[in-house]
Length: 220
Image (cartoon, rainbow, N blue to C red; front, side, top):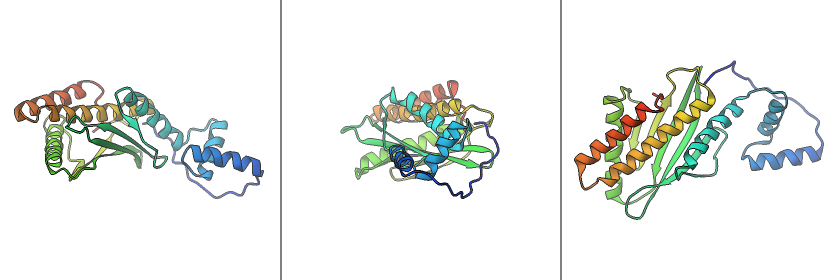
């Protein structure tokens, strides 16, 4: 994700008509953002300035476009830097798995915090889910050569994703995130398809991960 200079923010006093403010507030409500941020985005677009918010919009747009065609459902955006999706899991009553994507910045690096959450009290389901997460971690180390960037709690998997090269377009960054989520979701459903045959579950899940690496892999 290409990086320009960091954009600092300052407080400015503006005199605006009530009609303009009402229109801005309506837009801000629709976009689930603040009035100040909405005005900032409007002025940036008018002056052709690429803001961090616009970059995040581009990344999220790519994720939505790619995943919406594969059954993922978009949830209400909690903030400008976060996107939430959900997908059904192939297990008995089709419980819902939620994917939360948060874009972060660490200096010049582009980072993503991905949270995969399943809200369930079914201890058997939780047991199998943790088995899958542990297997996925092992594959990331053994096959992907990736160091530890994750944590596992009951029903929740948190993974930090980073670009190996910062000179990647926002569109490609979004595609890489979507591809990783798609692979993770496919691996999870494949694992659950073979619960009665643990050896096949491991082999099939590994095949999904290897397919991901040979395709649009790139996040570490």
